[in-house]
Length: 380
Image 1 (tube, helix red, strand yellow):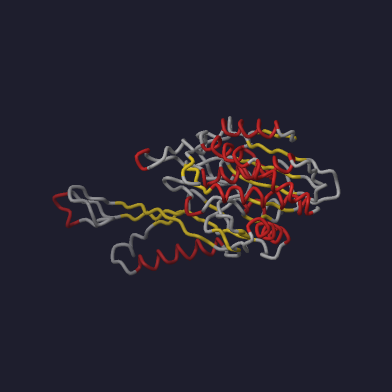
Image 2: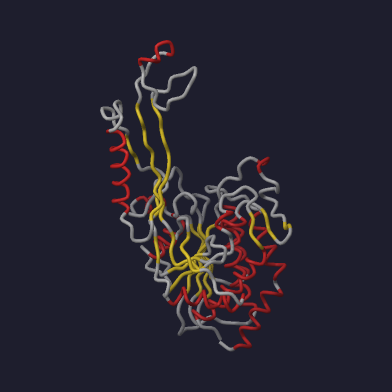
């Protein structure tokens, strides 16, 4: 691709700066807590259709997901909660690229905890505020805007460009997993999760657990005969205690061994207690579960994104691992799509009150993604 063509593409992004911000604001203003993604996915599908893409809209198959080894138990299915995939068909001779993002968010929390309306998408001092602004509607906006600018610049991709916008990332990752079950594959992927525009070839895993401790019940007047499960309660005597927590894993770590390690540690601690050694706590692994995932930092897709970020900003990108689980576990694992994380949202703002993203980071991400489409897929 010529220097002049790249210059024209970057100029297209700059010319559309206002519209890119408006796209992000529109996404933030649509409430889309996990389980309520229907409206925002309809918005995305219509946007991709207006771009002239081939658009596939379908509801993930809950029953099929239940049979998959990557399934995480959830309490509801996917009626009215479709995945959306838009494809820019390549002219031939290039490599394919999948751009992945999710539209669901965690709940807003109490309004009084927010300085800015969580659904207001207010633009203040170069930041857009609102639930999902960082995690990860800015990433979704960057994906859509990069494709729009690529097409508006009059470019045609040689390889297919797949825009993969999914549901239910926050609880299970089933949206991305179902994309793979649907048959979507690519030579490489970019997941635009929160990274603060760091280039991240890997992410941690996460295992949720519960530890149930049994005490000895006793009446409040004879509490000295009991064993307090949590050692508190001036007018009530708790005879059970449920501890909930999670632990992180790193790429390559054996999750089964990590689970055994926790169980063994709890058992060792119980043996040192006169009550618990005869009434051992119960450890259960329930709720969210995610494998760690990584590709080599020297993989061509990592180098492509890093090179283009430097071309856009003049700075070497931070190369790091994401300190949170991500859907790359499905893309790299079951999908065999080598995928790197790169997105404008700061990980520090993930699930935070007064969540925000910097507009300059959003625009830099759009430019980096647009150039990466050109380099990876080939453009003419």
